[in-house]
Amino acid sequence: MTKQVAAPDSYAMRRVGPASATRSAFVDSVRSRWHLIAVVAAGLLFGASAMAAGPLQLSSLTPPAGSRVAADGPASSPASAYAQHLARLINDYRANKGLGPLELVSDLTGLASEHALQMAEERRLSHAGFRDRFDRTRARICVENVGVNFPHAEAQLDGWRASAGHHRNLLEPKVVRMGIAISHRFVTFFACS
Image (cartoon, rainbow, N blue to C red; front, side, top):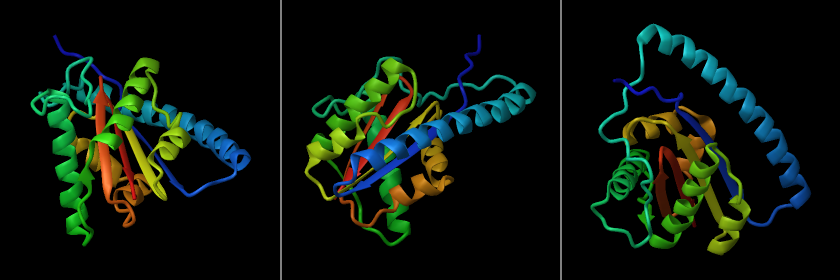
């Protein structure tokens, strides 16, 4: 029996220093409307191509349902292995572009884990709580990419590289630390200065 999954999707967010709450709420509202339109359009496009190609198979690298990267979790867990692999891919990509590596740290991984779990529970991509995560870091700049339903880490990175906003976040020269987490098929990359 084959298992079908929804089309892969991603969403990017960045924040530098304090910003106006009114402007941010307005931007979030506009972004969420455009994101909904983009997701529906991608679903329609993917649906047509998927019907022609047959059902999408889940890769053996897809984490099991309920997986979650904990800041102090076992390094051998499937979710932790996925996060570490994605971190290596991101650092290799940054090195190829002449940028320094990002250190995978437990505090940002904890924040990413909370958010990945929240998205999985709500069954939707979002940047809800980004301002709170940013404030909890006390960093001057943070960026965040989220994604869902990519069958493996390489596909997730390719999806982010193909999107201008996500790509910019991956190559932000001012960030030096990152956290990556996955819950069900929801991934959060959160990096800060």
